[in-house]
Length: 330
Image (cartoon, rainbow, N blue to C red):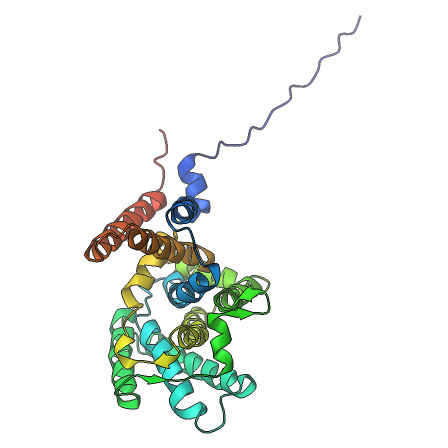
C-alpha cells in the first residue's frame, strides 16, 4: 500500500508594517492630522471663516513652502533661502515694468515672470553645482542681492488696481483664486511624476554617489531642482500681488524662514531624498491654521514665533527618528 506524502509547503508571511515604517513612507501623515484638527478648531472659533479670503491669504505661504522643497529634496545640504525675495522681485517687475509698458496681460506677463524666476533659480543651481559652493552660502548671498534689487526698484510700496491678478484674491469662476495658484504648482509637481525626473531627484537626494554610479547626471538633476524652485516662486508672486495689490520691497523676507519650517513640518527630510511638495503644502496649512486659530482666540502674536520654533524643532527631531535604521536582531 502506497502512502501519499504531501510535500511541505512554505507559507510566506508579509512583514508587519510598523508605525515608524508607515510614517517613514507617509511622512506627511502627522501634519495632515494636525491640519485637520486645526481646521475644525478654526471653524468652531470663527463663525465666518471666509474660504475665498483664507485661500488668498494662504496661497503665498503655501507656494513659498512648495518652492523651497525641490532644493531640499536634492540633498547635500540643499537649501534655497532666496525664495521669498524672489517672489517679491517678480512682483516688482510685474508692477514696475510690465504693467506700465503695456505688457501686463497674462499671455505676456506670465511667461516673462516665470522666465525670471527660473533664471534666478538656475543661477543658484549652477553656482552650487559647478563651483561647489555650499547651498546655504549661495542662496543667502542671492537673498541679500535680491533684497537690494527690490529696494532699488521700489523704495516705497507701489500699489496696482484693476488688473487680472486681482481675481486671484477673489474667485476664478466658482474657484477661489488662491486655490488656483496653489493648484498650478501641485499639477506641475504631479506631472513630473510621469517622467523620470522626480524619481531621479529622490535618488540623488537619498544617495548621490549611488545615483552617479547608476549613470544619473547628478549635476543636472540638482540644477533643475533650483530652477523648479525659482519657477514656483514666480507663480507665487502672482498670488502675492493678488493678495496685497502692491509690491513692497520691505516684505522681501516675509516667507523665508517660515517656508522652511513648513517644509520640515510637512515631513520632508532636511537632508534630502524623502518628502515632497504635497507634504510642504500640508505643513504650510498647519502653520497658517495655527496662526489663524491663535488670532481668533486673541492670543498675543509674540507667541507665534516661539510656537513656530518649537514646531520646527519637533519636526526635525521626528524626521531624524524616522530615518534611523532599525537595529537588526542578532
